Image (cartoon, rainbow, N blue to C red; front, side, top):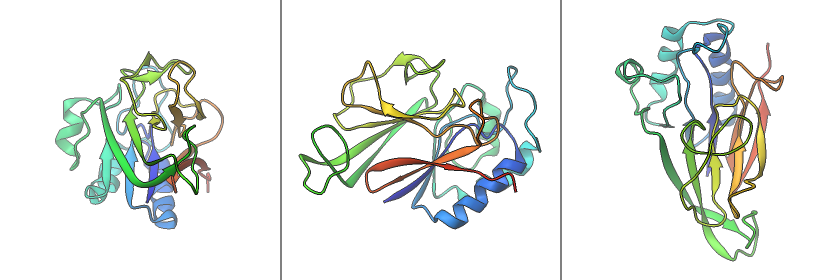
Length: 198
């Protein structure tokens, strides 16, 4: 099972096009969008190529592949123009094909089958990294928290939530750590992929 994970497009058609190119290359089973898709927000400058209507036109054809959650910049009008649900504060996806060791890492000889992915934006639920909140429900050991919001990449254990791995793919359009990026979940593990400016 392969998922492409992206967050914080913020209405940039320029960077959304690069994400669409990545989708063509990666050929994921599903696309997990972690919020802040169309609006740049009052705290951000306009991203390069700001054109939310163009982003809508790129995302809507993917509706049958998309699982999305609400970011702090989403509003009811966003749901009116997007063909997939995007207003939930969180959702979960279960990968029954993943095998894990007792510490939650991928393994050939698992202690338990399956891995839960908890998708959220980072402003309601999070593991406390950067300016995300430290608020999570009880999650099964070996779960992965997928979140955005901070525009900074993270891939490490959640310090106050034992057994949970925290993964932030960074920002597609307005990175605060220097590189535009997305994430890939495959074979029970997550990794970053940079987006090229060309």
